[in-house]
Image 1: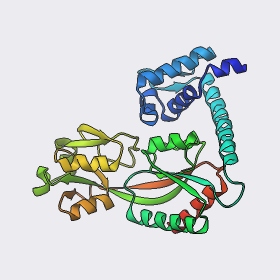
Image 2: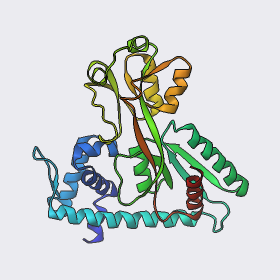
Image 3: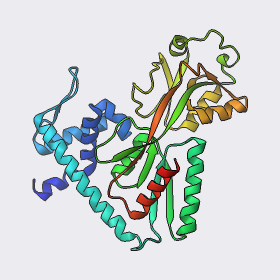
Image 4: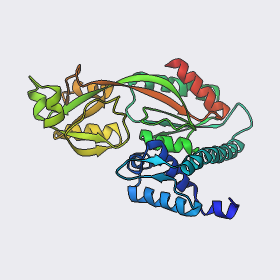
Length: 300
């Protein structure tokens, strides 16, 4: 393909196609890309028109890549890797050519467990003590947004639990956290949950849906009514406190509210589940980011 044709296919269109392939469909890719299905379908149609190829079959029979689509996906992986390497080189040029100084961009999900925050504060304090010129940028994102920032080289290190593991990133286990079902003090179950069953929770109460992908094998509950959506744990907590919904929260956060008499954990044995958080990063990291990550891993 000549350069003029490549310019007409913007990188966002290629990222949409890659997300469709990795999520196995346009609708499933919506959570990762955080745009409407019509926009994603438009990107796919634009790419197929520009290439003169049918890249996938979609419809009632389900999603399936064509041979051309599989080849284009492999080419996209190589192209994205090259673009990210170019961005990384530009970023590295801006850094001080020394072990001192530098910029580390860290991305977290919200409401991490206390032991993680303790380790993070310790590592940040030591980093500034040993290298006063270093600069940290710390962002809070949903897991899917975090992956996008890492893939586009807008962040160096992420930590969270992910529903997909793009091949351009490296993932290593960080820690395991328990999620528990909660209701607020204004909810009827706060005062009377005697005889409550797992099936009752699923079928008879409004739930809060997480706006990002959570694998079904991780969270085994299937609520009948989902009438609210959140992308951050603090937003979930506020809806639970309002009294109409029940939903999952990290145990540390739930215990904090329970200790204040504002929430109640429901069916802690039957309805709770564990999620494994992972570190996510690119292999070609700046030295300061790689050192910071290794030392955080040792602390945890």
